[in-house]
Image 1 (cartoon, rainbow, N blue to C red):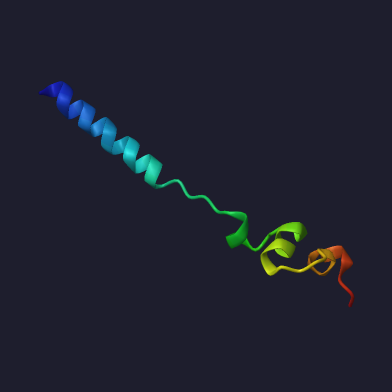
Image 2: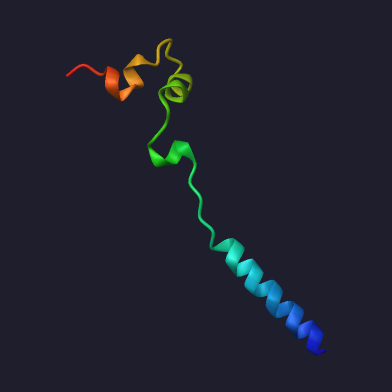
Length: 56
């Protein structure tokens, strides 16, 4: 019985640690590489999406 309670408490702690891990994908963070932005919009050139290539 003591081992069962110990195993359950370890499992609960482990599940809590895993559920609290947060991760972000590139699409949601706003920092998408120019080539990926080109693919998402269907554009033929990535130049408009590159920060160093934008005209003022």
